[in-house]
Image 1 (spheres, rainbow, N blue to C red):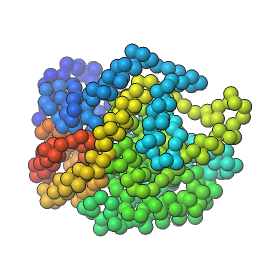
Image 2 (cartoon, rainbow, N blue to C red):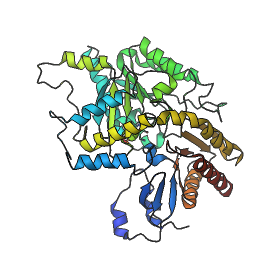
Image 3 (cartoon, rainbow, N blue to C red):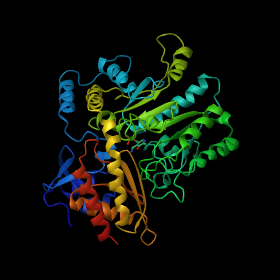
Image 4 (tube, rainbow, N blue to C red):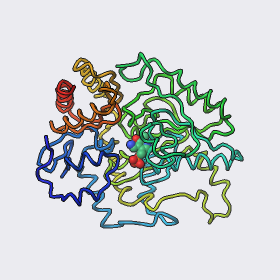
Amino acid sequence: MSHISKSRLTQKQLDAHWMAYSGNRQFKQDPRLIESAKGHYYTDIDGRKIFDGLSGLWTCGLGHNVPQINEAITKQVNTLDYSPAFQFGHEKSFLLAEKITEFMPSELNRIFFTGSGSESVDTALKVARAYWRKKGKGTKTKFIGRAKGYHGAGISGFSVGGIAANRTLYGQGLESYHLPHTQTPGTEFSKGMPEMGAERAEALLDLITMHDASNIAAVIVEPMSGSAGVIIPPKGYLDRLREICDQHDILLIFDEVITAFGRMGARTGSEAFGVTPDIITMAKQVTNGIVPMGAVAFKQEIYDTFMETAGAEHMLELPHGYTYSAHPLACAAGLATLDIIQKEQLADRVKEISGNWEYAVHSLRDADSMITDIRNYGFAAGLSIAANEGDASKRPFQIAMSMWDKGYYVRYGGDTIQLAPPFTVEQPEIDSLINALADTLKEIN
Ligand code: PMP
């Protein structure tokens, strides 16, 4: 089916935009254009309603066009549209920082603002290195990431990231080494946290033996890997990473760009899985995806180290930041978003309903034998799809396109289909999404 009949775009216009993380050649032959969004649905340019099965890009847990957020942004743009991010401030950034600390583990109470998840990762890694320098341990510069990890599109993010397709083209990055991922044989179709696989954390000890803790600044992992297809940590895995990092004076960074602010049925992945890192990166849901923004939460001790070791008071303690750090529109959107999540107790709602979500998602197991694994936690799920004649991503692509034709947006990546409904999703919407997927799986071969 051709998706578009009403596009007014010329080929020249289509060609002018080099689209992010997209198959440009395929898209431009058959563009899928979204015209508007409201609640849990997009409307495409043909006027078709499309259910948002990934909450944007894990961004819009509150759905689209949320009146309180729109009003907050409108009011803000008419009051203070931009303010210099350096050396001068505006009140909302301080209010938002305090609000974010209400979601973070209590020790992580110092918030640095960025413009995206990638910038948050870059900030966390830079601060980790600088922190050790401040402590007189300047040789601690290497990083440990994890296979299948995604930490953004920057040079630092791809270095610590472990998704091969996002790495192979770019050559040398930061000096980084990788833990094995935690998808272990025998854990397929686990519900929630797998029982097996925690021993994979021991690989950190091997990396420490190889590189020596005196050279390692930080370990960075997503508590739940999102982009690799929703990989849930095995029970005890994150706890063991924490233990080893403590024993060897290595900072532990949780990249919570997807998991913070409710998706795990808790305020953070840290809370959901009961392990407190030293640094948390976040973005996406902090503003409901409406205005780009990222942030990084640090343990106070890290912040204090910079404050205590800087020179005269007018000196910068950390020469780092972005033109769009603490952008007033993002701060207004963030305050409105986090206010709704708290007042409507949406993290609790996700937790309560996640059992129904789990049941629905795992019902797909019988839909077709091409599903080789189903994983879920909170309002997230990943399906692994068997490769077709050695091509891992062809079927996931076909499934996502067929779902779009049926009126459902889901994401494909590698050999997986990823699902992440809005926090406010209703049961009939879950049912119709899963039924459409079951039908689609029967059609694809
Ligand atoms: N870290 C994680 C865990 C992510 O999922 C993402 C985005 N999917 C990023 C970092 C990068 O965020 P951004 O695209 O906003 O730069």
